[in-house]
Each structure stands twice: as structure tokens, then as C-alpha cells.
Length: 376
Image 1: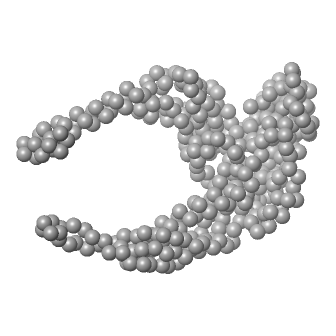
Image 2 (image 1 turned 30 degrees about the horizontal axis):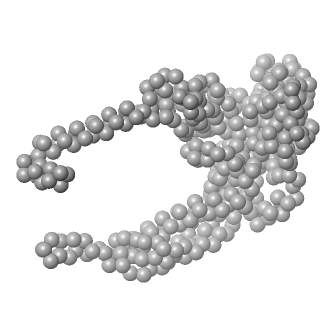
């Protein structure tokens, strides 16, 4: 993810200041030790206190979001930093504000880009280290029964890198008025004497409400949205720490690209699905079936916060195609794409057909004759 400028500098590059993390005792690189959950020197193991932006993680009033966003200065384009340890110039992409110098390995955090937009209110630190993440991925691959056998033996390893993705979390109280139909089932006989179930529908309406706490919406514009959603949720309620640059040392980190007001529209869809479920449950207290046709929802006490959440990410190649995966850096949950074995799928289908055929042949001959006529 990090490129140098040895041959060609990016167009319209801006030189910005960076913060580095170097041990005062030995000059080694300071990083957050995942196993120990401490900020320390990777060489001499001297421990340091993390300097946080605030003492607590604040929930912000959503009504004041737009004013807060307008008050910040956006940062656009490529940025170039000069490593304070070795002098090498390192390029940051438009969405990136944390990197590692490829020459000396020191962590670089672009302070100007970080301050552009709304700064992070908090962060969930890594709890799953790189080795454990790789083991989680191995287990995930081996559990994919329909994956090709040679893929399970040859999938790419070692390319795993840690990163923090920007998220918005939302709290809200939602009240929704619904309209729809409630169905009552009854049994009736047809002309041929057979019974069938008939549903009589009646117009219904009502009100449902729910409180939502820390709905998580990714603020990155990455294409692998399904993969990122596949490793949710994070425990942002209990495990979010006040933000500190030190947590980012040695990891890739992104500036948010989706703003909080756009993210709230995604959160509304999640809340509406839950309210629709509650409305259907409310209807079935009286009726046998429910058909929710409309919702009119009002939201109050809406708050938000900007948090960075950890994951391990990589891509591997197989027969000319690239497959991406991610591992939740807090829980170890794995999500990703992978190839399918046509042979295994065919064998599975043939196995099902064989089992059904064996069952049918063991049935009464008259029943078997009827089934043969149906499928003839």
C-alpha cells in the first residue's frame, strides 16, 4: 500500500508533516503489542503511555454534524512525507493517513490528513495478532467443503496486513407508524371434498418503537463491502478506546470517504428492517399472518461517533483470479471470496439424487409408479 518516489513523484503531491514513533531509549520502533495490549518498543520492550486526544469517547449530537463537518478543512490528493528517521520520501494515497517507511520500518502518521475532516473519536484496538489471524483464515479455508482441494493446499499465505477502517456508529430512538394487513387462517372444503387453508385479510395499523445502540456503518469506499460487512459486528460499546496515534503505528489507516449524513441513511435502512420485523410481530399477536405495507418513522436522540476498527486483510491468487478476504482484528471472524470446485458440486448433486432414488425404490410400488408418471 506504500510507494516511494525514487523514480517518479505523483502529480499535485503535497508535502505534509508526520508523527513518528521512536523509542527514546534505543531508537527502536514503538508499536502497540496486541498480546500484551500495551504500547512498547519492539526492540528493548520499554513501555510508554499512549497520548489520547481525550479522556473519554464522546457521542456527538447528530443535529450539529453538518456544522462540524463544514468547519473542517478537507484534504484532497496525494501526500508526500519525508521520514524523520532516514529521510526517504513516502507517498500516501488520498484516503490513507498512516503507513510504514519501507527503508527503516518506522511508522508514519500524516497529521495534516488526519486532522482533515472530523477526527476519530475513538478506536477499537487489535486483539487478534497476525499469526492468530492467519490461523483463523486457514481454518476458514479448510472448512469450505466446495473449495478445490489444490486451493486448500496452495492458497497464498504471508501477505496479510493490518489496517484500521473508518466507521460511523449511530445511536437513535425510532418510533414508526405502520399500516398493513393481518390474515386469519381458516379451513374449508373444496368441491372435491378436500380441505385447504384459506386466509382472510383485514386492514391493520399500529405503532412500534425501538432503541438502537452503536449501529456500525463503514465509512470507506472500498469495493469489498460484502466482505467488510461479513466480519461485523465489533464491540464498539465496550471496547472503544479514546483515540491515540500510537495505536496506528505500523498499520495502514484510512480517512473516511463516506460522510456521517450519508452513513445515517444506511443506518436508517437497518433500523427500518428491525421496525418492520417488530410491526409484523405486533400484527401476529392478533392474527395468524402479517403483511406490513408501509412504515412512517421518526428518529430522535440521534448521536454518532467516528471510530477506527481493526482488520487483517489480504488477497490471494488462484488460477488467474484474485480473491479477497478479511479477518476481524477484534474477534477473529473471517469473511471472503473463494473459488468453487465444479467436480465437488457435481458429486454432491449426484449423491443427493442417488440418496433420493434409493429412498423412492424402497417405497411402495404404487407410490413409485405415480412418481415415475409425474417425472416421465
